[in-house]
Image (tube, rainbow over all chains, first blue to last red; front, side):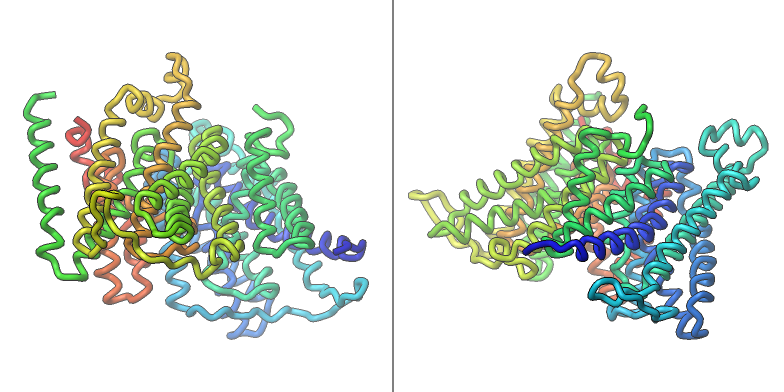
Length: 290
Length: 317
């Protein structure tokens, strides 16, 4: 099958759009890991629950943007509750125990969603349905808006971390937990806040991505796996690296799906991960490997 | 330490073994099958304990070894006439071992969380391959086959019924347990435990840590494959669901619930988990994972040693 230029352009745009959503999920994950050494296995479930809260809010109010806000805040609150109840007692223990605890949580959340919302996929209506013509396709504007919004949210996070007072607290905690605590920063609450922010970002991406695919209880699995790959490829705890890796991996998958089925295209990102681990175990996009 | 401890251990071992031998004669059909299944899952969990409990590496990829054992057995049973039990075992073990070498080579370069994620990703690779390669693996539907007879060619041959299957599984699991116990107490096992306690120091003392880790992952993978073969024999099918990483997650749950670093603990954990599943399914139907997940998370926080953790020292004597 000859691959035409227009197909490549379309797949490039598709890849970037998925990549931005993935970056949004992964930046929450990497933020949580960088600050608390917690690998959040339940991240995909927070993404999925965010999408469900979005569905419910849209049904109730009809407003997509309100749904985005409500889902983000509600899941951020859930994240805070999860952190206080299950992760705070594990502080100071082997980081591996946090994988186990969050894995247990992901089982609970996923089956809760199945129980509460049933196995049938729900659909989120796109907030606007404009198209522009791209070669032979009517490409929805909404996809580009998602990419832009994701970039805006990540940008806002970056600005907050760089200049906000609390952002500086967070970075101080990342660098040296004990010293930060000695300077009067309430480290346990910083952890809670970071987990809440990560959860909120996951929920926001869930709502944004909802219109492109159906919302169902198992959607979190795919995403958490992809987000893990991205976070490792980008370098654990490295925000910029995660974003670059998210776009890189999504583009590769998009191009690969020109030749093979999307289910098999996933293998491309697995191979990227393995190659990264072999040659640059600290991550592809880290400037100076330690 | 004292000489009484081994006596106590072997007495306990004998009693449990005797109970398991007579179990199929006393229990009703359903529970008989249940006990056999516990033994198989227990073997899988025990193989994973070599990594989690003794080497300090949490593998989230044991479903790959388990699944390849299943598909290996399936390949032998479907392609060779008449189906042979020993060929199924050989094929399954070889399939699992090949995958284990591959996974071990890459994943042992990484530590802690990175190791977990890499094994998880590897199991997903095999899942995708098995799921999409429909011509060979049957894709989503999997493969079904008939059970071979138990016997030695030319000597004797009896068809498997549920009793002989149980005894066969019990024999395999018991031998595996004794082997694994011996391995963990050997100098090799001691090095694994010292890697768990302090990896840089082990390296400084002069052990080739990477090589030990590779062998540990392979060993673990082969025993997981053995469990896969047994499961294939019991259920007469192989399906991609068993390669999915949720199975790996359950294996980790078995370990944590039963107590890591004890070898028996994971079997107890498997029994506990399956019993909880059985019990909660009555009230929650397919949502039994909600209460089980809560119990699991609570155990991680409040009872990190697991059910048999308090016996850890004794069981390793």
